[in-house]
Each structure stands twice: as C-alpha cells, then as structure tokens.
Image 1 (cartoon, rainbow, N blue to C red):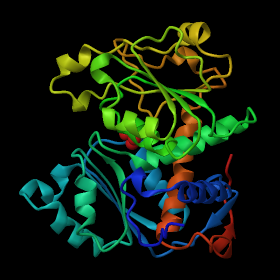
Image 2 (image 1 turned 60 degrees about the horizontal axis):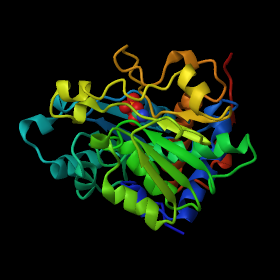
Image 3 (image 1 turned 90 degrees about the vertical axis):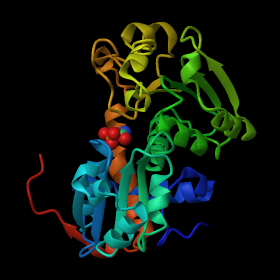
Length: 334
Ligand code: CP
C-alpha cells in the first residue's frame, strides 16, 4: 500500500487500485463531517496555502472548505499577478518560501508539469489542482467516487461499466486523469465522442487499451451514447490559440433532453466536471436536463469536498484519528 503521509499528489499515475480504494474509503468516512452532523478538528492549527494561478470555483473553494471542515486554517493566493511570480520569481523559490508557511499546499497553474516543478522546492505535501491541459487528479478521484456512488444505485460497481467521454478530449485534463484512473479497473467500454481534431491524445488511448478496455472513438453521438455514464466536457477555450478556433467547435455535441431521450439509456448517469458553458452558442449540457434524477453534476461537485478531505487526512497522517477529534454541532443547520 502506498504511504500517503508526506506525499505529493501530482498525478493519477502514482496510484494503484489499493491506494485509490483507500482514498474512496476515507472519503466515505468524511460524510458526517461534510454534512455537519458532527465536527472534526483533527487538523486544528494546520495551515493550507491554496495557490490558484488560474480561475477556479469548485476546486479552490472545496479545497478550502475541506481543510476548514477538518479544523485547519486556509490562506488564499488567487491569480499570478498578486504573487511575486509576476516579478520573475521561479516556482522552485516560491515553493521553498511558501512551504515554510504551510503544512500542505494546493495549487493550480496553467502550465503542464508546473505543479510537479513547484513540488520539487516544497518541504510539505503539494496537491495538484490542475496543471494546464495535463492532469487534474483530485477531480478524477471525485469523479470515480461519484461513479461508484451512482452505480451503487443500480447494483453495479466500477468494473464492467460502459462510459462515454464527450467533448474536448484533447485539452480536457479531467478526462485525461479519469482515463488513467479507469485503467486500474476491469473490462470497461470507453466511448470517446469528439470532433476529430479534439480527440483523446494517443498516449491516453494507449493506457486504456493496454488495460484491456474496449475503446471506441467516434465523432457522432448517434448510436454511441447507450452507456451507464456519460461524462460531458467543456470546450477548453483557454487552451486554444485563438477564440475563433475554439468557437469552431462550440455546440457540436450539446447534450439536452431530446438527445438524452433519443440516444441514452433511461438510467444513463450524466456527469460533467463543471463549469458547464451555458452560453447559447455552446450549451453543452442543457438546463432542460436539470430535473432528470440521473443528472449527477451537483452531487459530483459536492463529492469534491469529501475526496479533498480524504487527501488532506491521508497526506497529513490523521486518517485513523478522525473519531478521536469529533465534537457535536452546536448551531442550526436547515
Ligand atoms: N471542475 C473544476 O475544476 O472546476 P473549477 O475550474 O471551478 O475549479
């Protein structure tokens, strides 16, 4: 079993199936604290530095929420322009300094491998909150937690499922990390629906096929969405060389009630890492699906708190001590 304590969390590639099972198990044990049925102050006195050099709503705020739910204190840096990185300071020097102020660091940065580079200078665990188009490991773990939870409703597990990954699979780091994670499981049929120019990178397809999974690649929704899970993604406009180029692909694979009824099974679970682009020209996941109980996107975002709590508990070595540090909730929670 991987030793989590003191480890950086940089890529899904560092985990085996046992390590992933342990993360999901610890995440499950966080439910009473995240639901405020009980408080846990096991990380009282610990400091998280949340360094977000790219926009984020869910990842940054759920990292902060997760740490505070375990009793820790959170400091935030938002935008490279507010940091001395904008004066030419290196990631290594920044890490040397900030890790001296922290017990753990969560970081998002627009450049591929930047978080790993930062981690070389850090004396405390660094958790990758997304490095360019490369990876988003905590998102993949919360996605897997969600798949497991949703499949339980149908008496299934993660093995043997059919999953569709759709949209901008070239630039979408969440689908890269999720594919790596799925490669640890058995007998999965992965259907990759994307415009040819935005298909999944070959090395990720190789990871899936080498795991023994069936991989179907297509640029058509018709006949290809009969799955247990459909995972829709956004056109990652910030990774294109121009807005005009990104505009060319918007709206090609809009998932709405009509498409769902025509092409999906009646129990296909709908996932999306969010944010969804709800502008009319994109509308990749229509609000007309909001009343569909199989729309798991907000449950998925909520699960991010559980998984990030688990990663803090594991990397800081307190995953076995949670119940010793419980307290009752003393305020009204409607
Ligand atoms: N899913 C995700 O990474 O969302 P944010 O960009 O809002 O953090």
